[in-house]
Every structure is written in C-alpha cells, then in structure tokens.
Amino acid sequence: MFTPSSRTTLFLLGALLILALGLRLYRVGTYGIYFDEKSTLLISQGVCLEGANQKDVFSKTYFTPAEFWKPKTFNDFIDANIRGDIGNSPSYYGVLWLWMEVFGLSDTSLRMPSVIFSTLIVWLLFVFVRRHFKSDSLALTSAAIAAIEPFFVSYSHIARNYSMTFFLTLLATHLFLLIMERVRAGGSVANRSPSLPVLYVSYGFVFVASVLSHYLTVTVFLCHGLYALIYLRNIRAWVSLGITGAIGLGLVSLWFLFGGGKYTFFTLEYQKNFYRNIALTNPYHSGFGIILPATIPNIAVRAVPIFSDLFIVTNGMITVLVSVRNAILALGLGVLATGVIHRFIGVQKPPTWVYAAVPVLLLAGLPFYTLDPLRLLVLSIAVPFVYLIGRYVTDHTDTAQKRLVVLLVLLTFVPTLFLLFMAWRSGHTFGITQRYSGFSFPYVCILVAMGFHQLTTLRWWFSVPIAIVLLIQAGNIVQLLVDIYADKAPKYTYFDKPRIANPYWSSAQKLKSLYTPGDTILYPNKRRQIFSEKMDRTYSPVALLDAQLVNVYLPEDAQYIQRIDPNERNRIVLVKGRSGEKITIFDFKGSTYRYGE
Image (cartoon, rainbow, N blue to C red):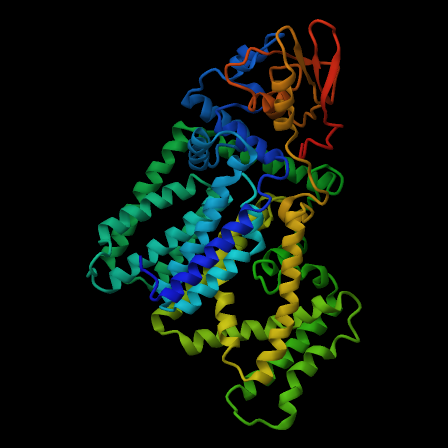
C-alpha cells in the first residue's frame, strides 16, 4: 500500500471519504426493511423464516420473547441460511452477526456494514488506481466518481451482501495484479512490500471470503483467469495460482458439502423451472415483476439498461433508448462530432468552422427529438466520451498499463455477459438485474475517470460543449440521488412510493411501553401464497413471519404472552388483561406495509 504522495492529495482523499460516508449515512435508517432485508436480519440471528428451527416455540398456542430468543447453534445458522438465502453469503451473515452483537439490532445497525464497505470501496479504488496506473489525479477522480455513484449509494442503504462483495472483489483484483507485478519482476520485492507467498495466501483468503459472500463473484475470478491466460507466461506462477485456486475451492467446497451450500443447486434448479414457467404462462401479472422467455431479443432489451447504467455519464439513458429513431439520431450526431474531434484534435489553428462544429452537431438534433431532448443531448456525447477513453489509453498509458486496461474491459463486461448467458440457459429473464453484476462498477469508474482526464487535454472549442452537456448529466445524477433518498427510485430502492419507518421496530417499542403482566399480544396470520408444496408449505397452519420480526426487537428475557390470531390478517393487537380492551398496535393493511411480501 502507498501513502498519498502529497498533503494536498491526502487532504482531497480525506474530503472524498467524508463525502462518501456522508452520502451513505444520510437517511440510512429512515425507511423500513423490505423482504430481502427481513431475511438478512433473521438469518444473521440464526432464525429460519417461518420458524422451521423454532417448532418448540410456535407449535404451542402461546409463546414468549424469551422462548423465541433461546440460544442458537451453528446448525441453526446453516438452516436459516438455507431457507432464507439458498445457502448463499455465509461470510456476510457472519460479519453482520458479529457487528450486531456489538452495536445492537436496529435498521441503522443492520445497514451499517453496507455503509462501511461501500465507503471503503472509495478508499481502495484510490489505492488501486494509484498503485497500478501511477497517477494521483486519476486515482482521485476514480474515487470521486465512486463516491457519488448512485448504485453504490443506494446499495449502501440495503442490508445485503452487495457492498461487501464489491469491496472484496476489488481487493482480490488488487492482490491479483500485485502478484502479476511481482512475477514480472522475477519475485523481487521492495521494502515493506508483501512477499509472493503472502500475496498468494491473501489472494486465496479473499477468494474464499468473496465466493462465500456471493456465489456470482466467481465471474471476477473468471476475468482474472482470462487475463492470466492472455498475458501470463510463467509456469511457476501458473502452478502457484493453480495451488492457490485448488486450496480455495477446497475450502469453499466444505460449505457445499457440509454447510448450507449443499441445498444451493437444488434450490437454483427449482427457481429456474419456477420462473421459466411464469415466463411461459404469465409473464406480466405473476406478482414477481415482468418475467419474459429468454429469447435473444428479450435478453437484449433487458441488457441495455444494465450496460448503459454502468457508466455514470449514460446513467438513465434507457428512457430515451426505447425510441430507436431518436437514439440513432443522437448517436449519429455523436459519431459526426467524434469524427471532427479526431480529425482536428492536434491542430492548433483549425479552419474557422471547426470552432463551432461540435456544439452545432450536438444541438442539431434538438428540433427533431420527440422525447426528453436533454437526455438525448446527453446520449449524443456517449460516442465522443468513449473516444476520449480510448485516446487516454493510447496517449497516457505504457505497455503494462494497457494490459491493465484489457483487464478493466473484461471486468466491465464479462459479469453482465455471464448473467445474460445464465438467463439464456435458464429460459427466463428474471435474474437480469444490475446488482448481480455490480462487481463491474469500480472498474467502470476508472474508465470514466480516464475520459474526464482526456477531456481536460482537448482544445477549448471541443472540451467546453462536451463539459456543458456533462453538467446536464450531473444534474440528472443529483436528481437520481434525491429520488434514492426519497425512496422513489425503483431500480435502486425497489419502491416508487416511500416506505414508512420499520413497523416491526415501532411495534416492538409500543409493546414494551404498554405491556403489563396479564396482557396478551396477538399477531396477524398473514395470507401466504403457496406456489410449491415442497418449497413453500411449512409445519405451521398460520404465518409466523410478522411475529418473528417483532420478537427480534423485543427484550431477550421478556415474558410477554403472545399468540398468532388465525382469523386476523393484518393487525398486531394488544389485549389488556384486566379490561379486555383491544389496542391496535399496527395495521399492515395487506401488503401495503409488508414491503416486498
């Protein structure tokens, strides 16, 4: 690791980290947890969804928080992981459990590991770029883009494994490149630099932690393998990497043989058939969103926003890409502007018409665009911006760094291409979503930073019009962040109407203040849809999830008398023992406040 080369660089990096942390902390605990986060919460406490490992608690008519909170074993954790997340992400749940043991159970505490890992991505990206591209300014720009990237900000507010996996895979790539660097240097090491054995062990450890944080991180290591296949010509290094990989796979396989992973492939096969059946029979009204058959056109349509939103300069362009005529016109004008830039990029005194060529070309489409002209104006600079990235690589990188750019390109596109391939194999489009290939974002930040740097080297008559359009896109990004904080950016928050604060937590607080000995707490029997007798049917004739999620926030030694009311669907009710008065603690109103169920 390198210390920043100057006080100014250190100050700017510190400011970026403060900005990143502030953007991620803002409103982090404002909105209630949705279904995936409910699974996260229960799994981290070793509690199975719908109580498969709590039969002794919920098979009785009455139960207490103290019974709910009976000590859990590692087998409970495995069982909860299997039933709540198909055996995925055990390393993340372990980290989360440890965190909440120290900092307690609250929405903010639940999401804080995501906040921390997301902020660490900004720091690690700076270290990564400075070490491998030897540029403080490029490193700071890359970190700045990561600090404000809406994808990183939004997923820092979600209690799932994503931020941790993005950090771990970036760290793995950094270690991999250090190994490649050391191999090319013949194994020689500088003072304070890790030796090759230490790097191999570290890389293997991060590989195991990454795969056990999310199985799809294997796509990142696939990119490492492709890069090594192209450039690594050292037999000893291949053997060392092979041994490292074999040991890592051996350790991971233990989870698949003896832990929750042994049910993963069975569950994935069931999900493949389940969603494929929906795609073929009820693609639009199943309650799981739009799930289409995995034809090439359907996959392509779903892939377009995944690729366009990877790049902060084209984020949100799907709203105009749906119009082929408008998109072709905008991109065509961008191609013409790029041609002018390329032809006269090195000419100090070009013909007079060149000074106005780029702005005229960019603005020429405005009278003809039939929807959202400003976004189409932004789309028109996508081509010259890609050209600028290429020029940066050509003009400002040496041979070794050009090889690194090849790796960046692999890491940018391979995870999503793998996702599309798996969708085609599965026969449905359900899994084509940004978060499953989000490992690409750090590397895209570097490529975008290269484009910004190259922009500053252009003659003002080229750079100014492009910079003005980029400012328009900056306004779009600010608005997107505002929507994320307002909980109405469905792609990022999953909701278009703001959630209220966690009703389970608030209900628990009310119960703690109102409950007196002799009272009884009644929980609703939420209507559950049974899609598969084998996968969805539980031992209990009533739904337990609402009761479980309230009990998580009740004192572990409390002796509150509780039961499930089989005839009530929505209300948590406190029945006062002496008077029989019924106090409604909370009304879920069907799925309105159950978020994602």
